[in-house]
Image 1 (cartoon, one colour):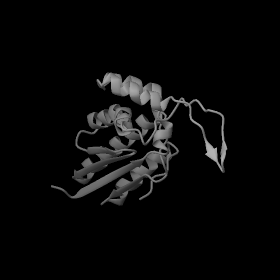
Image 2 (cartoon, helix red, strand yellow; image 1 turned 135 degrees about the vertical axis):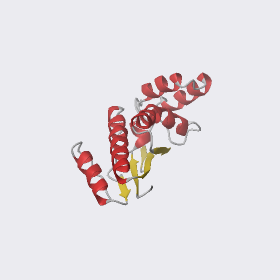
Image 3 (cartoon, helix red, strand yellow; image 1 turned 45 degrees about the vertical axis):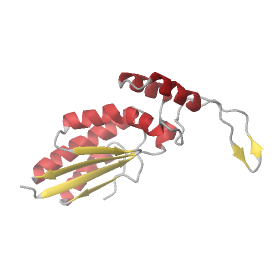
Image 4 (cartoon, one colour; image 1 turned 120 degrees about the horizontal axis):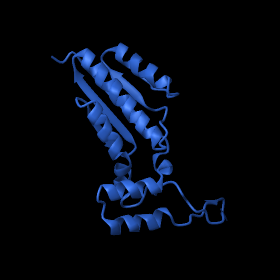
Length: 168
């Protein structure tokens, strides 16, 4: 019996700029990412960068964080970064459907109101905690859409205790 449904949309702030390259290397290796492709990406990610404004150029800047969004494998690096977080959310809330769209994560549940509440609360907490632990800040564009406003209030309360604002 499906009497409730809900979606938790998690948006990550400046996602590519906050990705730790060392973590990408570790996670990509763990996921058997092709080493030659990884090396090619690393030469792009770790190359000195020069900022330009009004015709003036900076001294070279050596990056330690961030992957280049335009890189041919940037989305694969992003997926590697979020893989363990999504896997943990699925393990803790197996009835949700959690998906990643680059820097946006969606967790969806439908069914009895109590099940939807439990699964979405668990998934939301797992996703947010995992992202924060990985150095990925949560944007204030994150939101929850549910049929029962009490579920939304529960998620908002839980997130506010973590210092995160969730819209509805």
